[in-house]
Length: 106
Image (cartoon, rainbow, N blue to C red; front, side):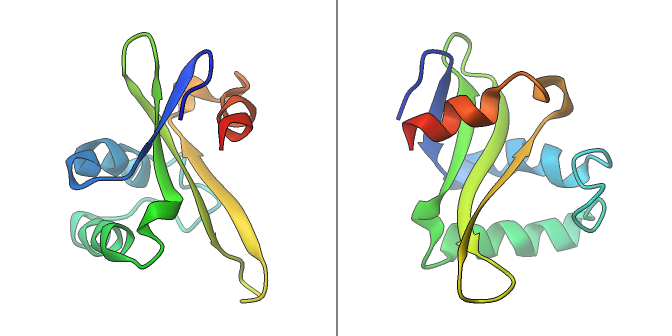
């Protein structure tokens, strides 16, 4: 799926290092439990990639350069009744409208 500036690409095993940038970043993880260590990240990535909902995770890349900028996903909300749209972006792409542009495509 593409927008004028972004590509949404289904999550794959090749995205391990890119997604890891998000999980290690203290600013990205400030309100969602803090940075995750290597072992914890490995477990979380494995859960994402092998989940029955794996098709509901997309990496977000810039169309022009294919640079990784973030992750967007659909997940069960904490109430276990509703679905939420989750996202994590590298700080360099905060406040640039990337989430809105990405959601218009999905």
